[in-house]
Image 1: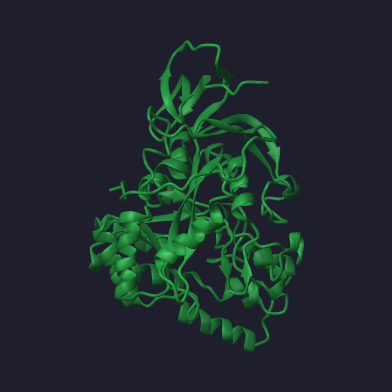
Image 2: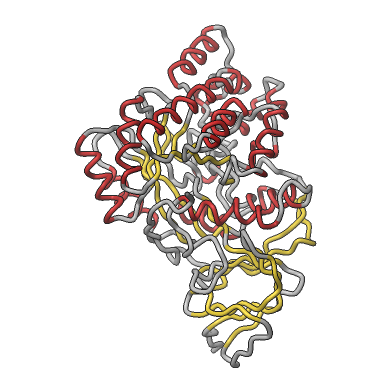
Length: 474
């Protein structure tokens, strides 16, 4: 019988963190980074991995994923098992998913429900945001309990989807005031939901039913208006605020101005806003349904502003908003997926896959094209998300005492992306047929090798819930 090694020595790799870039040996032992040094000597019970020519990166931290999320009458097609396996193959070792407060239960009930489903399935470590849809005195008490005793310190609210998830300004303000005072963060989906609903209604009444009208009825100016409003609510509440999936300069310009004023405003964008633009909507093809996400893709000019903001830290995080629905109805038994809206674009579930391709696509279009340094690449995909959401320094870096979540990445390799070769349940990828530079070679979760080239060595249930602390980024 082969004995499991007590530790692993990663020898002679190029260690990249948000601030450092050096060649060293890294010893993973007892689930943490034990020692970093040159020419480390180890015993025969330690596995040695030659990482010459490879980057040694901290495991990615994706703070915006939707696994088993019920949206209206449908559910995202990745389970906690399939989604976290895909994350691991993509070099992400920690995800933060969403627990949805229903009309009748509390944030505490939402957390318990999500954990009950995740616990036996997750193959990487995870935490939770709570989507708060109703605010009253009891909810605020439960939020405080969640922060103090459940390790959940971030709460998402929607300015869109009236009648479903949208909260009014007073509810958002109450949450900002309390969560901010307790050291947590409110994450905001910023779009003017009532105006957008009117535009959707008018488009359908005019007979415009194809998927392209999803983009036409969610104009960037309505993202900008809601972003500005959210910032002013946060300013009044004297609380930090985090904007999810920023897609446009209409939103970004308010974020930049607020940060210049010293207001603690933070924001993410997603790979799809950097990879694709609104030219994909220039037909009435049902294939466009795969690009129906919220907010929709924007112009090439907006992309330029997003890249500038990433370079100068006006955007601090690149998360995936992995929200997968199948194009083929009935794939793996999933119903009411993208084709639900073939005769009415407003019925298309909003979202796209991306959890497995985040690191390699950003390496290709960011690092290899000179838009991001290697340090900034790590900062955006691991370190700052960990800091903003109370996971650092346990997660998000390679340092003695940090969790041994480590990715060995080959910058010289190339790969061509095909949905059939990915590890999630979705039947398409937005990157189908695209050749990318860079490849994840090995992934360690708390020192255990879970991805070895094409081989899956992880298992369902090995991931752990990670309680989170206060915001650490300002």
